[in-house]
Length: 172
Image (cartoon, rainbow, N blue to C red):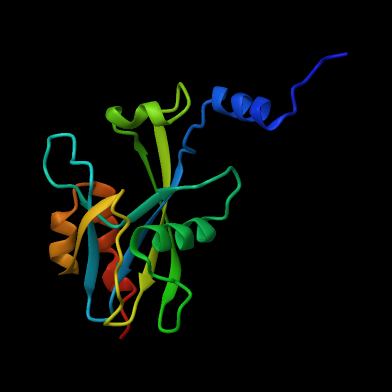
């Protein structure tokens, strides 16, 4: 018979001893308005070369098997304060996936041997005067840009490429 410590202290110690790695599956949500303006967020951590790191909403699944849409809804709310289910908002799975190598400075967040991330792309159409409330832990500024300029400002090639698909989703 094995003696297991099930006290709160024993359970906390067991959980603390087990590393918690990020899941290498994430979403990219391009938030935009009907006039083609795209919301970009400046990360609190600079890009590897020390320059500003502008991007759309991104974030990993919280657990294996989490639905892509649920991840997108959660990440939008966490990073921008926007309720993607509010009246006037339309969240759409663009059915695009990017697969890329994880930047070396962030590999420690993932399990040993994980080098690749799969990113599912969504678009979120929002009303013209949607309020943005940033998570200061993740982002220091936001700005609305014409979709072409937004694509040019993105640090990540996958963000820029996703934004270039936007004309296919703009209302006629």
